[in-house]
Amino acid sequence: MRLKDKVALITGGSSGIGRETALLFAKEGAAVVVADVNDVAGQETADLIKAQGGQAVYVRADVSKAADCENMVAVAEQTFGKLNVVFNNAGIMHSDDDNAVTTEESVWDLTMNINVKGVFFGCKYAIPALRRAGGGSIINTASFVALLGAATPQVAYTASKGAVLSMSRELAVIHARENIRVNALCPGPLRTELLMKFLNTEEKKQRRLVHIPMGRFGEAKEMAYAVLYLASDESSYVTGTEFLVDGGITAAYVTPE
Ligand code: NAD
Image (tube, rainbow, N blue to C red):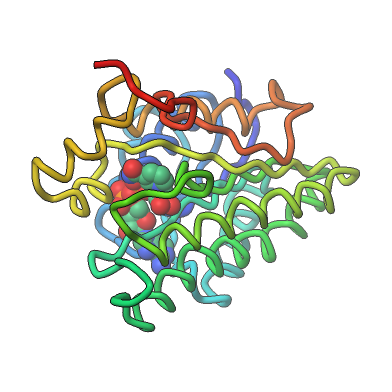
């Protein structure tokens, strides 16, 4: 088992990438703390893990709130005795997020508070716990849009993911000699609720698909396997990366017909 005896905290664990990763981590031997604002689905993730014979606890945490993030780390240490892996994955893509002229300040602030400040708080409160455990691995969910612009505008989201990527790089450098690794996962467009709600017409979906060499959206599970690698000791020399799992989208200038 690739995460035997590890304790992992996953934000946004109620759905999509977070849930798939929680299930996979547990199968690979980790005790998992599932944090989210969707209590029903979060508890369901924890129950699914227990049903497959794993160890899990759900804790409500709005990652934009410092006290909630402090508490989710405390719950991990109190419940399982330590913390080794943190997956700061919770994020939103607001349906009114558009170009700079039309995007409301409130949409900008909400996106930044969850997507950027949420990752900051996740790191702020988890790093002391990782130190107590002798080191660990942090994976922050950015996006391919941290590297590429899109004509389907979502200015706040794109800016937030750029911030997650550069924050992850800087933290990787700061903590490298403490045996704490920090990597950014950069998923391509996925067939999860988050993106499908945003690309809510066939035309919008096709407009995105045309740029993906593989010609399909990715699956949350395909992210989970990448996160598993970054969380495990197999990636012991990997830190500060923009870990792209994107169906080739960032490699393409022109996609095949
Ligand atoms: P999802 O909507 O299925 O899951 C996101 C989870 O985050 C939900 O369970 C939601 O309740 C939770 N959440 C939202 N706000 C929160 C808050 N304030 N505090 C705690 N939890 C909160 O979406 P997903 O596709 O699994 O997205 C996970 C991450 O992947 C996000 O950061 C997203 O930006 C990123 N991402 C997604 C795609 C994609 O195409 N779906 C691509 C690149 C990056």
